[in-house]
Amino acid sequence: MRKAFICGNWKMFKTPGETVALVRELRAKLNESASVEVGIAPPFTSLAAARQALLGSHLRLAGQNCHWEAQGTFTGEVSAPMLKEVGCDSVIVGHSERRQHFGETDEAVNRRARAALESGLTPIVCLGETLAEREAGRTLDVVSRQIRACLAGFSPAQVEALVVAYEPVWAIGTGRVATPAQAQEVHQALRGWISDLAGRAVADKVRIQYGGSVKPDNAAELLALPDVDGALVGGASLKADDFARIVAAARRR
Ligand code: 13P
Image (cartoon, rainbow, N blue to C red; front, side, top):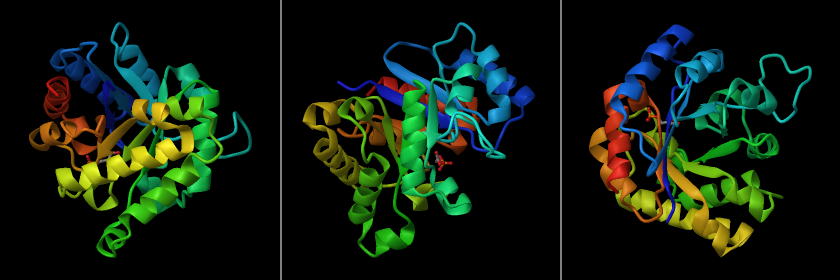
């Protein structure tokens, strides 16, 4: 049985001071238990403050991106070893906002995920189709191409160590969530392609999160789906109450 993993993607929200306040509120509201993994991904500048505020907690801490080199002349980038040293255990790579606004490609996502793995971080590899692609009936083609390119060349052990996040672009920040049937169809297909790449035993262990307008009132039905193993939560992760209710839904699944 795969343990659910709920991660809050804070995107470009929360200064270090605001981060400490939100972490405190979260710790007060989240009933931490070993049955669900919970994490947060604040902006880079808030990671150190978050790590401090998380002392004594089991919450995971994630970066929102990492470069493929450990160091170098890459102005504006942050490396996996840097995230590791500041106290992260995971990192989001390939988020659609990076693909849309910053030219992120599957090949770059592959290199970033590999660097994360080599630093001992869990990469959360994001993929998903746009509205135009879904309406053209190309969802499975697009997602299949993405997963193959993002995981190309990875050993079965590397695939087992990562998390995949299916985030349909049209559901992100729109309030328009995938229906359970739409989510399950893609998650099940993803598990099949992961099996082609790394074998059935590995595919059965890899967690596949759903992301895109996950809220307290839709989390339970999504998390109950057989191939949905958690959620990557944007807007609702910035409200301690909402995030705690999503985690509670994962615990009941
Ligand atoms: P929302 O939950 O705000 O739709 O964002 C989803 C997301 O992008 C998580 O990475």
